[in-house]
Amino acid sequence: MTHAIVIGGGATGVGVARDLSLRGVDVTLLERGGLGAGTTGRSHGVLHSGARYAAVDPEGAADCIRENRILREIAGTAVSETGGLFVQLPDDPNDAFERRAAACEELGISVERLDPKTAREREPELPSDVERALAVPDGVVSPGRLVAVTADAARRNGARIRTDTPVTDVLVDGDRVVGVETADGRLRADYVVNATGAWAGEIVSLAGIELRMAPTKGAMVAVSEPDVGSVLNRSRRPSDGDIAVPYRGGVVLGTTSTPVEDPDDVATDGATVERLLGEGEALLPGVAEAPIDRVYCGVRPLYGGDRDGRSAPRGFRLLDHTEEGRSGFLSIVGGKLTTHRLMAEAVSDHVCGVLGIDEPCRTHEIPLPAAEGTRFDELCEQFDVGGPADETFTFR
View 1 (cartoon, one colour):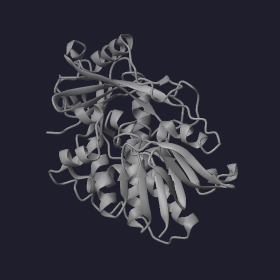
View 2 (tube, rainbow, N blue to C red; view 1 turned 135 degrees about the vertical axis):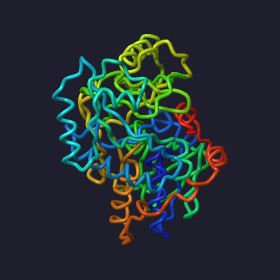
View 3 (cartoon, one colour; view 1 turned 180 degrees about the vertical axis):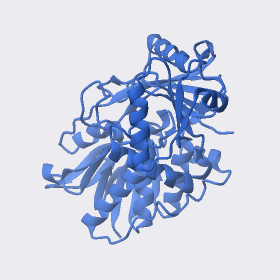
């Protein structure tokens, strides 16, 4: 049987393991710690509708709305259908609002224009000077639940999920990658997938090649009030502190974009926290004085763009390393939590094409079996799932 190794146990990695195992591939997933411990477990948890990107990246926005609809169907209670609002305040440009609305309509993303009274009826915590709002089908994902039930589905299909198993070397024979080495020994494979996100450059360096990532970290502040039901966005160009994400009992304020050299650099500082609270105050008056539950950072697996991170493409890239003399080896970089399933489909299509496996993707039509059950805590414990976002996004 064809054997593939997937390195990385975030949403994309477990998604690849599930997809390949459904196509009959013998899969082993290796994660250096617990599942979802990297970028996935440190996200703001938004299930994007695509509205945030519609005017500047229509292709990426189209991916988001497609995957948004699929995850609502297959992911059960790992998703909360909160809805979202893009809120225009006095300092926000009129043209940004209209461009976003028009772009959404062109892409088939449902939108509803709300006057100030209706917007505040829907979200009473909005400021009195709100000028209008655009309702869109955003939602919230519990990253830990999503990773756990996806890994469980892969395991049910025969995949082996190995946590606390860091890869220490990539095995190369001539111009082909033939496996990996861990503390437990060598593991050979017909194909190796590098799904380590912001750490992708470190893994490819073990194979003697270079991958220039451009990771940026984003800080988030979870506060225990106010009680908000929708994902709230400022209607302006993406910038620091322009989003508020509801969770049980409060909101997560985010986010920032700071270049980092080391993807393990997830430290933040008081000035960043104060900036996020200050920006959040304009969107939710009084939030700057709310009790802080936790502060955390996540590192985006960006590839390309300038070093401030805001202009780096938010789409994903599949990088086959054959041209660099390392066949049987690819890296998947970029992307978002919302599009992890699509990323996994692209990887699996490519791997199966190389290996001569003629099986279609079915992950978009098969519900995640544990997603409607009550086994989340059990599965999270089994897979050692745990991160700041996982502690935050447990729904009512």
